[in-house]
Image (cartoon, rainbow, N blue to C red):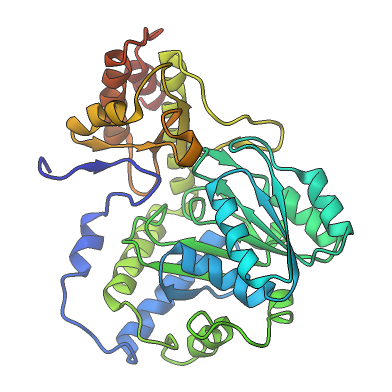
Length: 377
C-alpha cells in the first residue's frame, strides 16, 4: 500500500479488494443472463439503500448523468424551484436552466440552512418541480429531505433529490419522505468505481414524465429494458463497472445497512471531535432541521493558512483530503469518511491532518487523534 494514496475525499473513495478484483475478468455479453443477474443484484440492494419500493435504473455515466436524467425527464418545460446551499445545488440549478420553462433559485450561503420559506412561496407561485441536494459535500451539511418532501406534497409538486453522497452511508427513506426522483453515484458511499448512476422514480413521477426526453438519458427506455428477463440497459453498459458495483452492493448487504450507517456516524463523530479538540471551527451552520454531514466533514482552515500547502503536507504523508471549492478555496478543508473506511483510516488521516494543523502554526487545544481514538475505542 506504500505506493497508493489513501483517498479520504468526498469521493472517489478507496475500493475494497473484492471490488477491484472483479473488474479484471474477461468481458461478458451484456444481453445475457450473467449480466442480467448482476443488474438484478444491484437493483435488489439499492432499493433498500434508497428506502423505496421503486426499481432503480442504472445509467453508464457519473452522478451528474443521474442528475441530468432526473431534471430532463421530469422538469423539461416546467417551472422549477432549486434549493441551493452549496456547489451541487447550484449544479442542479444550472441543469434546470437548460430544460425548465422557468427556474427559481432559492439560494442560501453555502453551508447554511435552506430557504424553506422561500420554497413555500415558490410553490404557491406555481412551481411544479423542486430540486434538493440531501447531503451537500461542498459545505458538509445534511439537508432536511423529509421536511422538504412534506412541503412539496402539500403543494402537489414533484421532489427530485440528489442522494449521491448520502445513499449507502446515511439513512435515506425516499418513499417515506415523499421523494419522487432520487439518484446516487457509484464512487461515493457505495465504494465502487466512478462511472455509474442509479435513479429511482415514484409512480406519480412516472405519470408526469415528459413526452420528449433526451435520447441517451431516456428513463422510460431504461425502465422498459430493466423489466426484461434477463435485465438489460437500452444502450451498451459499462460492464466492468456494473460487475464492480454488484460486488460493492453484496459487501453492503453482508455488512447490513443499519451497521453501515452506524459505522459512518461513528467515523463522522470521531472526526468532528478531533476538529473541536484542535480548536478549529466546523464550517456548516446547523439548526434543528439541518445537521452536520455524516459522510464528509468540512472545517475552517487555521487563519492565514494556504490550502495548497496544508493539503500538500497531508499528501506528503500518503493521504489525500479535499480543500474548499470555488469561493471556499483557502477557507475550508474537507475530510471524507464514506464507503468502506473505518478506524485505522480515520486515525491515520487525523494524525496527518493534525501534523498539518500544527505545521501551519495553529496552537491546538489538545490532540484530536487521541480524542478520536477514545471515541472509536
